[in-house]
Image (cartoon, rainbow, N blue to C red; front, side):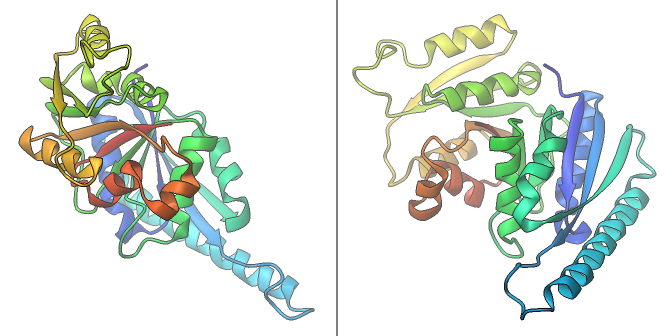
Length: 279
């Protein structure tokens, strides 16, 4: 399905501007519609305040969140007024405790959500929760854009991280509008299982599927010569001069990956190209 509804979420115009630029570039490239959620967050923690002050604190924090949302909306509208793509802003105020279901209600109608990297300087818990709201509750693919990076006008070279999982296959299906326009799609497989059903032709079935969709695909089978799978993927992105990485998200539990780390978290922290992921 083509990307016709492209959504991004803005919490801070300065910190998240690169994600807005990437969403604009993708909407222009795909001739889609851009929806911008301008988010104001009420960070009140019920029960933290002394008895009798909760209502006052809630009201003050809610008003501040509404003002933040309105300010972001004004900045975004002013920034986008010169763009020739169809766009709309949607001011949303939410409490941290109810952020996930509220965002999922809006995001479920999107074809792809463009977000900034959730980890690193200036990133709070809300950025990780926004990403997970899209992936797990909204059930929509997410394009994560590193700081200072935007989506290239021509996404010519794409690396697909393939491990035969349902998450990886879902990411590939979601990325078809991009893969079909690319000059080269490299299906990268790291240490494929020796006794798996595709042991004689790793990645062959996926490659065949993509070729039937008009994708110019090839397969690279790599050994895990570095400590982490993400390290090998990073090197492959450099070797292929890739414009984008496509991968499944959170093959293990989110709790395990947040505590012990995993390929998803490492790539979100380290990748210097946009990462399209799906769960």
